[in-house]
Amino acid sequence: MGYQIHDSAIVDEGAEIGLGTRIWHFVHICGGARIGRYCSLGQNVFVANNVVIGDNCKIQNNVSVYDNVTLEDGVFCGPSMVFTNVYNPRALVERKNEYRNTVVKKGATLGANCTIVCGVTIGKFAFIGAGAVVKHDVPPYALMVGVPAKQIGWMSEFGEQLDLPVTGEAEAVCLHTQEKYVLANKVVKKVN
Image (tube, rainbow, N blue to C red):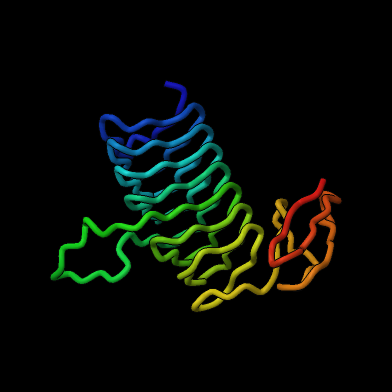
């Protein structure tokens, strides 16, 4: 088997779960889900059928990962954060054929109680602050806060805010890793 499932969890037949993954209390994983290696799914997590979760992801308590969501490797989903799968839901209107794809790129952090509106892409190593509501694509390394979410800075891969303006051209060094980042044309890249 190679993974750990708590006795209270429900894993439907057909679900793919990678080596070293830990599934905690009251989790429900649907049969079509694909979950990578060395992930941790906290208490009361739900994973729908058409979901792909990469390696080394951490999904904290009370998160529902709905159909058409893809989490690349190393994504962190904070407690009670929210994904949507329909842009304009109504209880009296069936919209299951209108699900929009949501992609969270490698290493991104989704803070506690934030909301990711369906159809967006969160760039690699982006950082979504607690309680933010994301309605548009987020560039790699961007730091987003507020309702609706607005970019207020840039983050290193280590998870520290970089001393860079939101726009312009500049360079910064992550104080923890000494890795260098360059901002040009509204894009941040790690250069070493």
